[in-house]
Length: 264
Ligand code: NAD
Image 1 (cartoon, rainbow, N blue to C red):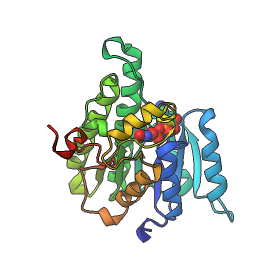
Image 2 (spheres, rainbow, N blue to C red):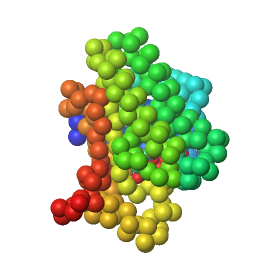
Image 3 (cartoon, rainbow, N blue to C red):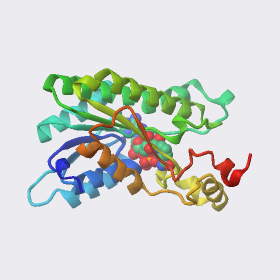
């Protein structure tokens, strides 16, 4: 628990499933107020469950807003929801993302743009809007971007995804540098393989699951809560001197596991 998080307000994008939902639950259990973002009505169920669980005793601590993070209108809706419902905003988590597998020479321009629009432009739009607000209010605000180990590790057949996450890395560092003197922080969390809807189909296949586990020195696939606990620490003042960094939450996936046991 981080006492300073009690009463803080966060927007978490793409948070009606997977890592985003785990971050929302962790923030709410820390006593924060959260704007949950869902993309389509088919994704609203978990947001509704979270609201039913935490909005008790006539206290509203969670609202769910439909919005597309790849548009300025969508981002504005999320921002305005925080201000209207909770009166202020302290933390913005850019979590929404998606991936489409395809050999690079077969990726359609439409699929390329879709991944870049959501995974990178969405992060830019969210950061831009909340920085404007942090500057106006002279707030020591906090931006947390969910990138991926693929901000570092090339991922064949996922060129657009890898390019978008590599972009998030430098976008995060640039923002951190640009606004450090205003005490606005920006950091990334780079998950490795964490069991969520994004990879549910893949991990149903025993062989694919085993192949992934082989790439993880700690030998197991992570849980969304492993990422959520880092998102809580980065949101808290315990990390107040940390900016522009990427926190890898990957069981060692980025430690060149093929070199384990002195191979190579
Ligand atoms: P997920 O599919 O459960 O979550 C992604 C969320 O983004 C979904 O709720 C989806 O509805 C939302 N979304 C997609 N397009 C959107 C849009 N235009 N506007 C708003 N929301 C939109 O999968 P996840 O694993 O929880 O992914 C969360 C983030 O973590 C993503 O950025 C993903 O790239 C990253 N990540 C996940 C893993 C992993 O192993 N699970 C690893 C590395 C990085």
